Image (tube, rainbow, N blue to C red; front, side, top):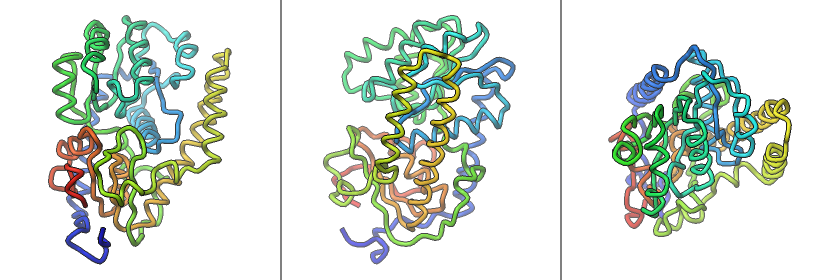
Length: 333
């Protein structure tokens, strides 16, 4: 592949500063609609927070916490897939359960779907809000197996990150399915972790190395850096230690301290990701949050779709014409 910096026809177009600012601010304001659904006078239990090294999920998590702070919610507890059962034992009857957003509604990342299914089955007397998600089922049999749990919950609201997901959820899961941008947009211009020197140069290729990667994509992206190259091996050891402690901990009173320790590492990793992206002028990526983070840092971003259309559907819903998008991996970049 030719250098984008040298060949301007391949380079992402520079974002119009005023236009991009308007769009990003508008996406942040759009999420006011969520505040009209989650009661502000009731306690909130935030469930399925990410305890892993995917910086994208960590940005969603931090953005959700910014949302709670912005709208003055009383978040009584935060729980991961490893400790949500012990945490929810102490939940009062009037609490609202808010479930973490992302790209795991369906059967691609089944451990998160199983947490959601368990919570929906066990807590039918509680209002449950699922923050903005992308939906994808590889196997139609799994949809048939899972959809009844969504259908039967009497007070469930789903937010979906793109029009395809929203239409699918509205048809198959619940009529209370609404279009909403990703929660990482809450960090726009407000997050001190992103207030860094943004004057980078050169090109960054950040590509997925997991089950969402498109095997047909350009060689430059297949051999690129991924998030685990940014977080490093020491963070991996810390993550394993903390999630093991969360899983084995039998005392609910110790759980908030563990979450606090994890949040310190989370913020370190987000800062590390932002600092890495800030070193470059051009970013080519098939990771949704590398693209969103790059845009928040004022970078020239080219988005390459993943293997089921997640990124293309997202940016066509929220930033049509504002970002260079490669839908077909065989087209190259």
